[in-house]
Amino acid sequence: MEPHPQKPRGEGETESCADSYESAESFPSLEGVEQILGYSFTNKRLLEEAYTHASCQKNQFSYERLEFMGDSVLSLLITKEQFFLYPDLQPGRLTRLRSANVDKEKLARVALKHGLHRFLRHKKPKIEQQIYEFAEAIKEYPLHSNGQIEVPKVLADVVESTIGAVFVDCNCSVDTVWKVFKGLLEPMIVPETLKVHPVTELNERCQKRGLKLEFKDSWQRRGDIDFYIEDYFAGRGEYPLRKDIALNRAAKAALNNIDRILKNVENPTLMMKLRSRWRKVLKFVYG
Image (cartoon, rainbow, N blue to C red; front, side):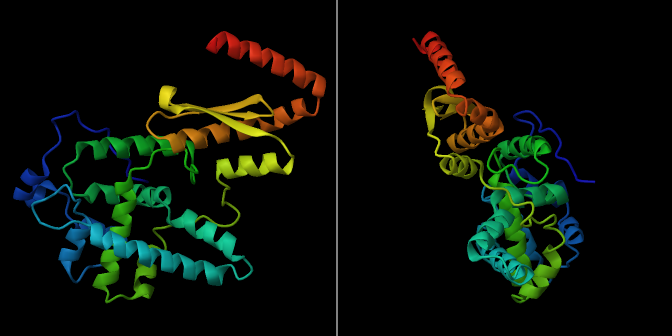
């Protein structure tokens, strides 16, 4: 069973990182990470570094260098695995498949699934809230949201820093790293489960049928974006904190409605009536 994040405590209740370092027992033992990985570190300092956020100044190091290393190692390992696993797949599709398996959301899910976030050493109370909200949001998307939810970067970072730490600790053996992490990265996204990005899919479907696709950007003012197909309202996406997420949600909403809109487009008389009605609605709403 996945260790689900607890709802974060109120402001002022979170223990400070500096205070925590005065007492080693205030953090979960990093032996727990070794148990999850099934790997025992020769250099325990690497493990500590891999789980120390930059907000913890006391130890004068953070996971950022190991994250940099882990990012490159993971990309190589996924490339190697897919190259031999899918001999008939073209480079473009291989690139998309690799990207889906190493992107921020995929790695954040790995951290959450195995509880790696519980060992992170930081002094940013907002991190706990972000992780909790992410854990709630992914319930709607079992495998991947394709850019429709906010992802805490710190979750992906800690997976990459852990990969980097194992890589350095085992004398840079990529085979050892793959043996440790292959199972943890499951379920992998495969060609059959690889989804097209909603904005890309919407563009492709409209271009294929020669349909005019436009969007109305009200994000700065209201936090939302609307898509129109042949001047007909197709879908709205809302997310005041990030414009790209609002755009992705709008595209997904339009895709959910596109079949109905296509039927209207194929019926010119009905389409004219709908356009006239929609113009009246817009005039009433916006003046």
